[in-house]
Length: 353
Image 1: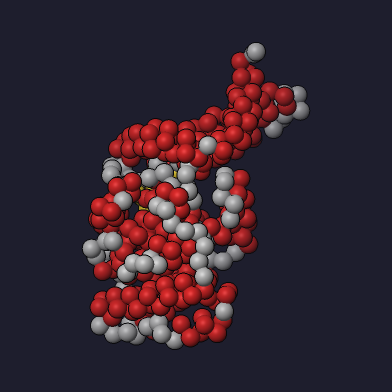
Image 2: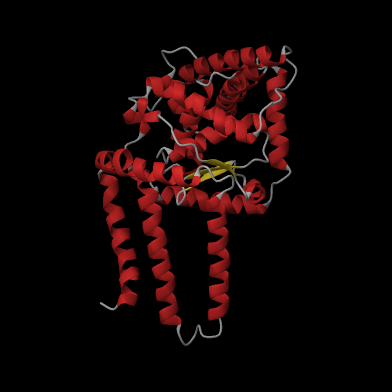
């Protein structure tokens, strides 16, 4: 086989192999997620973690500019050399595809957290109602404790860099109960593309090639602890958005700091209320009346922030990411973000918040 055909052929082999891997989640969990991946992940975080800016964002920028220049330079010779050009594109995609899965992507095929933590999948309306009332009481209490006034919104006093450092405390406490949530070698960054992320409607992302947790630093800061903890959960090898929402919530409420607890509980409450808004608007309105006005002002702050950046671009990127998740074993796509309510309700069914 000529060398120019090797990488394109290897891309086909990768695609075929990835059709088989979903049938062996326990094996993926054992050989990759709990063995090879932690070594690769911690190595990347040690290398890139101390650098104060996002290396991953810089790499994306270089790749995009280089790709545009490549296409521009090939524009005149495309018809004559189309075969070699297509082989070059497939070779690049083959390497990209391989590195993506080696460095992080195989986590899409690991054992679900429901099974790992032995949490039930289904819950009743009564279960959700009981949990929502508990979350309202807890969020109200913390908001009152912080502001001393139920009508004042919580003003977050820490910088984004402080949040990254302080998040480790929540994971340290969480790991006391669940050692597999142990986090070390911090590598979290303010994303250099926070403005584009805002227009796309995203609070952050994990760069799978550098293992840097990227956070949108423009959004309201009271959300930051849970959002950055969510991205740190991706760093630990959890690919499901619902699972990372759950882990991010748990790490936030386990934090010793009240503002971090507020971030976690208000995050969970928002999803519960949204769930009730769809299920039963009458119950939703009854529950809403029991939430402190100060908490609702924080929600309004977030709503106003995202509204000012709404464009058709956001819907386009959400459509793309929805299908990307579905292609990678996340059958719920973007809806998976809200599915973590299942995990919370059943986890806390017989536990206090």
